[in-house]
Length: 365
Image (cartoon, rainbow, N blue to C red; front, side):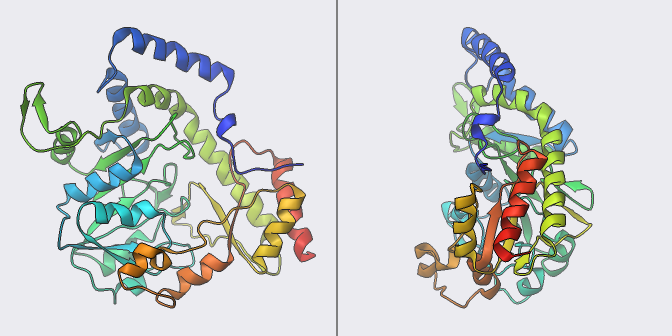
């Protein structure tokens, strides 16, 4: 039996592919390739169905969405922005891209930015809380300890999750989401969106993503080319219908994994907080004897991954900022123990039970 993390080939059955191809053929015949009607339709539907009607600006990647979100709140050279040390590279890289300085910080047991440690962190402008693996950070605590900071929500993995009933993308002052193929809402390539709190912010970003144009022959600002390709919007419109069911299935699988692994010595399942509903982009456990466990799982046909073995402060760019071993002990300890087990909507209960049995077998539980 084989149980894999990789579900890219399962995301589109023949019926869905054929329906998408029909719409792409219509798009090709219309010539509406750039800033086309499907992109506008997608923005409207995503706003209404996923982010409580907040205005969104569709762009070409989650990373670009983070960059535009930072620019929208005025982050630039001389500014310092806090970001967790265990995140994907884009969270900190977007800060550097606008000329600001990333200030790395430690995390809590949910892999999220630790608000208690943030109280002693020196920075001057903003905080980027990350929905790491789909788990929301503790927004109430972050607001309490950083009341004057701009809260830029990295919800690139968060679609489908919520904090105290507030959906991902609606907890911060401004947010970024990703539509990369490995995300629950995914296209046939990169894509993303900025989720804005105010319509005037969205209006400015829509100008900015299209070279600052007011018309074909006139610009009102210096801008960039960061538009979501209309072709991707066509795909996303088809995928949207399945997102809520996919998230529900991931939550069921996470519950099943919890129940099957909670009593295993040497394994720590993800902490649960009733205020925080994860999208379960990743299901991460902490394990003793990780390398031997992963070898055992590999031989059993279970694909286990590590997200990520080297925290940002121990990467070459992080060291260049002056960080080193021991600076963020929780992130470092988790990086040595964390394992991502398969958790996606294409797994059956037998697959999940096999993962549980394989882990339990290794620990003799």
